[in-house]
Image (tube, helix red, strand yellow):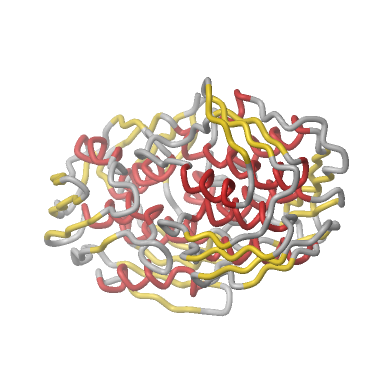
Length: 421
C-alpha cells in the first residue's frame, strides 16, 4: 500500500501534459473483443484500471502487449483472434465496475457471457439495470442468480431502445453489442460524453457502422464482422479538470498540454465565475488563479453539464474561496465520501441530502486523511496543496485507478509531494 505525503503552501507554476482518457480507454479495450483483427490503442494511460482490463482480456484469451510509437506514446496491441472462454474471472470483476463493458462485445462475438456483479468505487448505488434491460431488448436471455449474470443470444437483433437515463456505461455497452447484431439499433436518450464519440470513431475504424454519438440518438447498422485498426484516443478531460482545480486551490499559473478545450467548457465556466483566468490554444489551456477566489454554486449534470467526476475537486476550491457555495450532486447523491476528510483539514461543509453547503475558510490545515474512491482521493491531494503544514493521504491505490503519475506531474509544477510505500 502507498501513501502520498504533501507539504502545502506552494503555488503551482509550469507546464503539464495530460494522459489519454481513462473513460475512453476502458470501453475501447472491451471493444477489441468484437474482432479477430489486431487493434492498436494509442495513448492508453498506465493506470490500475487499464491494467485490470488488460488482465481481463488476457484471461478471455486475447493477446495483449505494450509498445511505444515514434512519438513515445504508450500503445496497447490487442489481438483477440481466438477467445478461450466467455467467463470473466471473478477476482478481476470485483475490482472494477467497468468490467461490465465486456458483456456487450462477448454477447455480440460469442453469443454468451458469464460475469459476476462488478465492483469499483464506493460512491453510492450504480445499478446495471439499464445495461441488462437494453441487452434483453436486443434479444439476449439473461439470468441473474447466485451473484452471477449469465446471458445468451444466438444472434442479437437490432431494435429501438429508449434509455430511462442517459447512462454513459449503458450507452457504450449497448453500442458495442449492437455492432454485430442483425439489423438496425437506435439508442434514444443516449449519453453525449466525448468518450462515447471516441468509441464510435474506434468502432467505425474497425468496420462498424455507427453514427450519432454526441447526440441523444445513436444509430447502429449491424455488420457481419469487423477487422483490425489503430486509434489514438482523446486526452483525459477529468485529469485536465483536476489540474485546473489544483491551481484554483493552490494558486499559481499553469499550462495544460494535450487537451481538447471544448471538453472542459462547463468546468472552465464555473472556475472563471470563481475568479480564475484562462487562455485557450489549439490543444492547450492556460490557467491562472490568484487566491482567494470567489465562492460559486454549481450542480452536476450529464454532459455537457458540470461533470460529477469533477465535483470533489471543485469542492476543494470552494473550501478556500471567499463566501458560501452550494454544490448539488444529481448523478451520484452519495458522492460525498471526501467531506468528512476535508473537515479533518478544517473545511466548513454542511451536508443536506444531495447538497453540500460550503463556507470558505481561507486556509486548511494538514492532517492524516483516507481516500475512499478515485475522485475523492484526488480532491484530498488538492486540499493538501492548499493546506498549511503536512498532509498524509492514505488509500492512494484509488488515485492510481485514474491518474497516471499524479504526484510526479504535481511535483513538476512545484508541489512538494512524494510517495511512500
